[in-house]
Image (cartoon, helix red, strand yellow):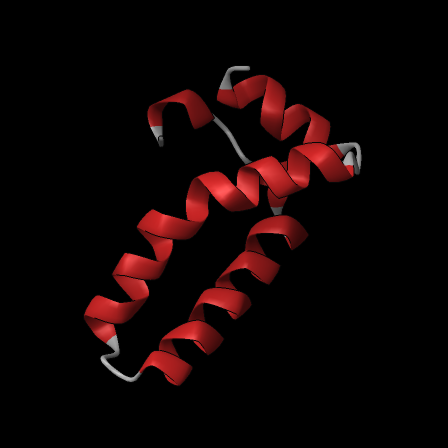
Length: 68
């Protein structure tokens, strides 16, 4: 599945697609969180807050194939 289709399904509330997107972003995004905040608990908090914002604002995603 390409990212555009995945994002489209996420905007429609498809839980399987949301989980797939979460899993795709988890490794890379958590790495960034740990780079900026060496404390594991703080990095986890930042990661969770970021994922909340991703799903809250997913309708605004444009040109997602270029982001991944």
